[in-house]
Length: 128
Image (tube, rainbow, N blue to C red):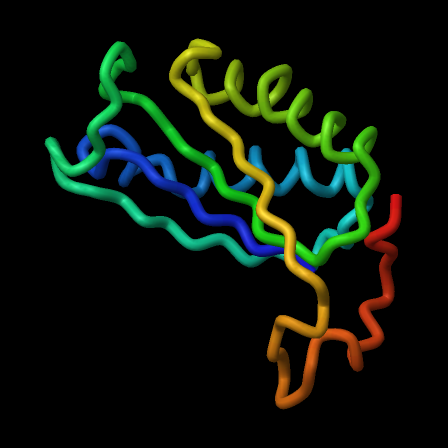
């Protein structure tokens, strides 16, 4: 299971939601083998001044990847590399203006479709 939260400034990113979502999804599909039809992105766009990040530009973007535990260190590094090698350039971001955080929790800590996450048959691996 993977959910993505995108934090940025509304004035910079609101009109580019589709670009952002597509770029992030390509990275997750490529690095982790997530199926194409498994996209869950939440945009948390803030008003000017609500995202305080000294020494960052107005385009500063934070991407949180919330997922089941189980992915290897190499898989996490591959996703982070894809974010900086592919997503940032596609969006015109300098490395200093992108931050990526992978937040993991065990499947039994999720409730999805009326059941505990560890009872789901996902159809894809999380232990890559």
